[in-house]
Image 1 (cartoon, rainbow, N blue to C red):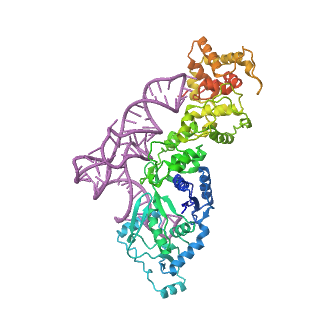
Image 2 (cartoon, rainbow, N blue to C red; image 1 turned 180 degrees about the horizontal axis):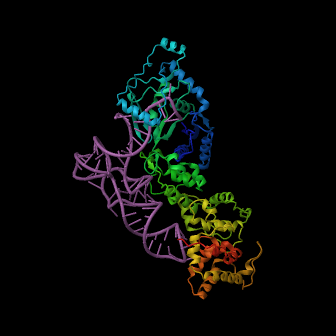
Image 3 (cartoon, rainbow, N blue to C red; image 1 turned 180 degrees about the vertical axis):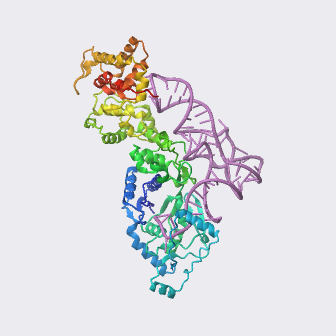
Length: 558
RNA sequence: GUCCGGUUCGUCUAGGGGUUAGGACACCGCCCUUUCACGGCGGCAACACGGGUUCAAAUCCCGUACCGGAUACCA
């Protein structure tokens, strides 16, 4: 029997990270067992369901890469079938008409009202005391003739238990006395959740229901419906919940954007990194390891590895440094700096495009990469994840600024310090545009503090110009062979700068960091020798001579 | 109230009768270094509590506390 699982969100809001994890676990289980992963939108709550919400769920699933294997089922399309089944149960005497007038909605929270009522009843309530439970057919007909509305309730037997073996929580038993005669069909003819779920799961041929632990008690009710219908229930597995740092419910109303999936996409997260993070929230392969590719997750996933206790999604409100779970952020950074460059590049391209920093010259033009030296980090990552296919990219010769080779080299050089895709267009802006800002703190620390640099750095530009001038040649031309003309590469730049530093009787760091600030606008980045090279001679000269940063006159806070 | 679950560093977790209770993130320190990261080394930090069972309990049993879920003509 092939496994068929479903992810069945109700479109009443945004796509919650908890839902995303449920989708992930269903997806992993399906792939692990070579089964089918289906999607059903539970849009039967007309009042709360929105198309926008459905769209955010669909977009979120697409971003995560969980495409359903069959057509999407919209539960609202099946309402007639659900009604017919309720009527059938009624006719078979397995359900009954309840003419009790519909209760008024409590003014406060529904949950509190339920709790309040239950407390008042002191647990003395008899779940079988409905006066219409054993009403005669004659009386029912009379009431119907009078136009009295009625709900249809399942007739739960007086004694007995429902039991099932949960894939995560083990044997679950519940006495009938704990389960009321649940409503199948509202008095307005609207089918209710438990009925709809059971009917649809049967129709979709679902073999395993993997969902949040908040459905544990619903499962007993659903099993009752399966029995009434004479259908063997599927296997169930319930997932622990994801909680807020205070161990309370994680909701958008209380916690804001951190709980919404689209936030992560928009914040420059990589789907593979976020999937990896989500997988480790409530599941573990019982090994000391954090980074897993999708294929590895699929291969290692099992219901046995799922925990029974809730997990906290750890973040600090009002602290921009920790606005989301630190581990999620770390994992994203880990992916950015170690994933195969060829996988990263398309994402960077998309980011630069949306920031209007992309240029067609960065497209590959068919030429092979310049000399390549795989980095050890990349090798380690490949070894750990069995990912291959990474064009290592340490150029030995200077590259023509603005070409594909240059682009690849630049991305590889700057990605080590980045956490999200957004960083490529913000912190990395100076590599792609002349229009970048100067970080006041960097200016204060590296420029204002050393006034002599105002003379020295343009002087350094002159020195560069004298030494490397001939190197500014047209793209694609053959390098000049004259021995006195030096290529603008790391080795030669270092020689020139060291001599310059000695002449001035200052420390190398003073010159380097001053140049760094002028060239990139910030105080952090790759080795300055690399920065000089990828910024290129022409832009280096211009920026070293520019007075913009000096004139920006910050009041040196920090 | 009742029913059902849960409880190992701040967080995610490994371990399920004998461990110096392990790893990751975060935090702190040192090294590397032209900056910041990365990396390396090190540090801080946990078995909720009380009873049993046992030669031996974080691990098994019972109880308590606390946390969570459910208890709807919501999904």
